[in-house]
Length: 378
Image (cartoon, rainbow, N blue to C red; front, side):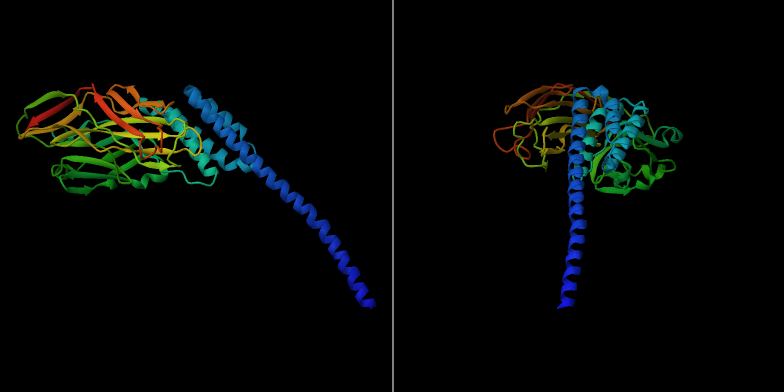
């Protein structure tokens, strides 16, 4: 009995000591959880404030990002702060490029990157952004020119994230034939890459187009003008594309309903051609202005607006600026008519029912822009 008593006393003391240890530990655990939750909410609020500030005053992007960086002082915000610092450095690098299309895109890219940072902070995975090529040192690869003067093709653009450089490919094309020359490309920065075509005269003579792709998506390319034994007979015609019947980009994020929150829509226009045909195509991105960020985005099919007659070949298409044509934020459920340098766009943003992938898109385009098409006798 005495031993049992001692056992019970000792057991009681052990329980008392355990209680004294465990109870404060539980309280500390609760305090830690509360601190994490508060920091999480503060971080999201600071990122949202930065996004809103840049949206309202795009010229203040640098000071806004620097202020955000200063606000992120908690150890729990280190990862976000590091990403914001990277964004500041890359944006300043873009500014120093002195390429107009790259500099103009800085505020929009800053907003999108902040949105991606927020997604990753919440445990999600941001989508890979399709890069934009906006400037090249060549309009075509003319084999009649001195090879030394066209030895290296240089492209400027943005959203060339170094993490995805391995997704770029370069092909020489002719009909259904293609040759992968991706080994010839070299990235100088996240805003510029080159393609070395020196010592490739014989190879280039077998193809008529150089095409650049990113993860399977065609970004652009250059026509290859074959060497002529006699001066070719060239001419230039101007063509205004016929009515474009529109397209609906696929649903890519969130639910399908914008619910009166925009969407904020951006439309880009591009021109392409081969020997026989010239075409335009569009990229559209429509994103809800509030969580859950319902998004519809994608490229349209090619809208062919010119076919060369037999015995003629298209050399080049020019006369219009390409890239972003306009952006706007929808404020109702009715069609919106937007004027741009290419013509008049009838747009559908929010609608009465489900939107993304169903109604949201370009309803039609009435062109006013004339395109200059250089053609040559074969």
